[in-house]
Length: 172
Image 1: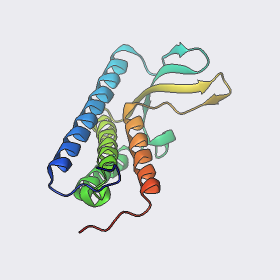
Image 2 (image 1 turned 180 degrees about the vertical axis):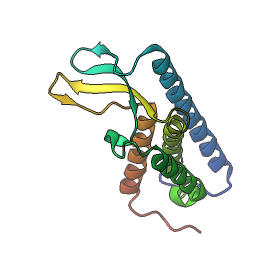
Image 3 (image 1 turned 90 degrees about the vertical axis):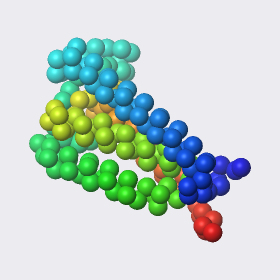
């Protein structure tokens, strides 16, 4: 079976792919929540620990917005947007996946990340971030978390799938 072959709806292969992708997504969601729990219990906001000098720190922050703190202070709007995006992915899951195994993983990774950050907004009023990449004091990437990585990885996989598959054969 070629990796470019479609997965038939309701087939045993579809169930296997969905279960494996679901387990991966649940493990990432658990890692996200456990790391956020650890940093919220053991760090104070703004505290930073250098891991790789000049490149990588653990820096605990509470992000009141979305990526790069946009829409800061609009927690309820971001919460509603996250929930709406999750519902849309769930409702249109099969249409979005188009029978492509890698898209099952991509969509479930995105859902995992949305769930992790939505949980934070709902229960803490802010997203807990702690991964800080930078180069000396010249360049700083915004602090992020495991859920953000899951969303970005899922989007990257989905986009790559679209480029690599160009045109999918029509469903029978």
